Image 1 (cartoon, helix red, strand yellow):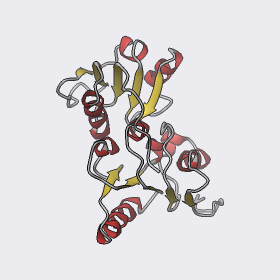
Image 2 (tube, one colour):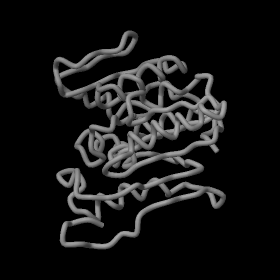
Image 3 (cartoon, helix red, strand yellow):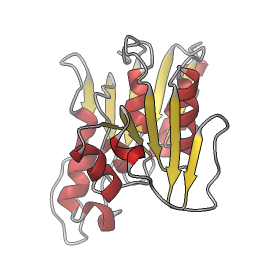
Image 4 (cartoon, one colour):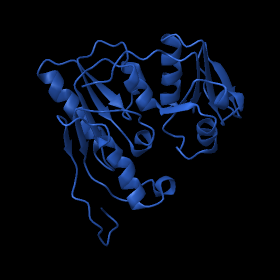
Amino acid sequence: MGGATTHVMPRRVTVLGAGLSGRAAARLALRLGAERVTLTDLKADSEGVEGAHNVFGRHEDADLTDVDLVVVSPGVPAAAPPVRRALAAGVEVLGELGFAWRHLPRLPTAAITGTNGKSTVTHFTGQLLRGVGRRPFVGGNLGTPLCEAVGGDFDSLVVEVSSYQLELAGDFAPDAGVILNLTPDHLARHGTMEGYAAAKAKLFDHMTPSGSGLCPQWRHSPEGRL
């Protein structure tokens, strides 16, 4: 089932990356009562969030080390220097997916990933659920960040997840997880196909014994597929 809602929002939160997911995470932290929320991005022309301390064009060391939680946007690699700096300082680090999950109620959750087709399957799954009278949140990597599901009137979650999101997904534990396929992609970030496959496989890390997982048979091929 979905994540628990017993977590207390930390007082000081920094969000790394001011893209769509990062801004959603900053808004959620503010909405849930964080005393100070810093949204930081190396792009000087990034879009800010009202109520947050917007720091663009640089990262301040104190925003990485003198805080209670750092939330990492999908576009920021887990091995990026600011992430390593926060971890070295003993600060908790979560991706936007894991941050949202921490504050969601317990709802039936399906998560879909893969190199190709995940947006289509996510959308189609949501349509099927609506067709039988359910009220699913449909989003994640597809359009609407999972942070925006918190507090919404949903009875289920259908979440598209990318390999980037799964790097720091915390205890994200869908009831059903699907890896549709794997072909060479994002190797500049993951290094090798094995690294890419390992990131995708994190989808199943916290799935309970009652959960259902589906993935392709992985093998090397001349085309580089697994």
